[in-house]
Each structure stands twice: as structure tokens, then as C-alpha cells.
Image (cartoon, rainbow, N blue to C red; front, side, top):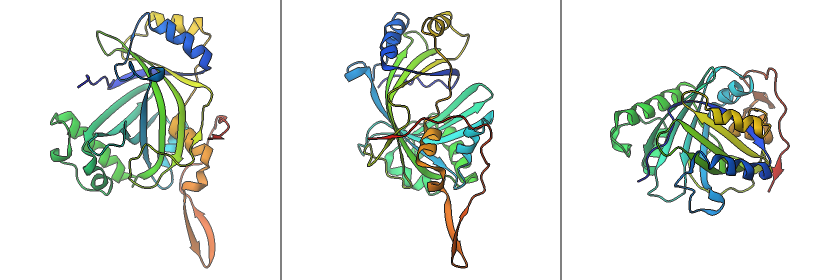
Length: 277
């Protein structure tokens, strides 16, 4: 089994670049890093990633992103195929100021539905008996129950990842064909019916590091004239579909109205145009 290259605490910089520039960045990066083993033998040096995002009925984590709250988190289930024996990772991604902190626990697919229904996690549903895996799952479930989070959207994309051969301090990824589709159930499929493409034809370039900002990162940013942007796949997907789709609608005295307790957007940034396909 491949080594776990999850960076538990890191800083990251995001950029939107053209496919032409992405190929040039690839040539530059390969002088410092090696292609991730999951993508080495695949077309485009990329492998598929699927995430099922959970959120409250008033889209609390979405609005935290839109409003630029410095301390926020996301809840997602990450998987890489839809085989019944493949693992599913419950991931808690926190942002504290500029730092990104991650926890995740891998579980058997058969345990997913029960956990999302509020069943308490135990060591029996985990793939690994490492204590940090159970702690991660417990923290995920605590926050999920705290905001009554439910499945809201399926995000999928192709990832090209470049990694250090001697440690886990530096990582460069390029994500293509980012798709989003609303999803309210717990089924974990790789298929989508009518996805929206938030960033096409651009590529999301991410520079991730755990310690000192590498000098060659500076050369990369300056040499390719890169401009830092925000590129939140889940938040952009929600905006493309429209927030109203996800709110709880009720009827009072025969009249329909939208029950909404989330925050209104403050300083909302421009969003990309949806392209269905």
C-alpha cells in the first residue's frame, strides 16, 4: 500500500491557470518533485477524486467560506472509486487564519450510512486501529451532529500531484475538470447526471508546504506571473447551482416561503460562469 501523504498541517496558495501554462508548470516542477504514484501510469498523470460534502440546512460552512471567516471548517467524505470494498475517508478540513489543518479517518464503506445517521463511531468501522484515525472520526461526527450536517453536494475532479521523494513538506497539485452536482443522499457513486463545471477550461494550481516557503516556489510564481486567487470547489459549486436549491422550503397558511437562517454574503467575490456538460 502506498504511503499516506496527507499533510496534516500546511499552508497553501491557489492559482487559476490555462492548460498551456499548466503543461509548462509541469515541466518546471518535475525538476524538484516526482509524480505521485497514483497518477504515474494514468492518462494525463492524473487520478480521479470524489468528495461528498456535508453542510447544515442553512449552509453554514458555505457561508463561512463566502464571508471569508478566518476560522472555519469543511466536512467531506472522500473516495476514489465506487467499488464496495474500497475505503471512504471522513475528512475534517479546518482553516485557522492562513493555516490548513486536516484530520481524516478511513472507514469501511458499509459503515458510512450509519455514521451519517448519527451512530457513534467505534474502532470496528475503521480501516486502521491508529488512535488518530478514531479521534479524527469522532471530531468529524461531533461537528456533523453539532450543525446537523447532511450531504449537499458531490465534487469530482482529476488531480495531477507532484510530491517530494524524501519527506512530505512540499506538494504541488493541478486539478482539472472540476465538476459539481447537488446530492442529498449518502450513496457514494462516481457517476453524475448533470454536473456543472465551475472552472473549465482553467486548471487549479495549488502550492502546498508545511514549513518555510521554498525559494523555488517564489521562482515559479514570479516566472509564470501567477496571481493568487480563491478557488473553493464546494462553495463555487453551490453558487453555480444557486443557494435557493439547498434551503428548506416550508408552507404556512397555504403560502410558501423560504426558511433561511444563514448569514448574508459580505464582500462576495465574483464567481465563474457555469458550463454544463
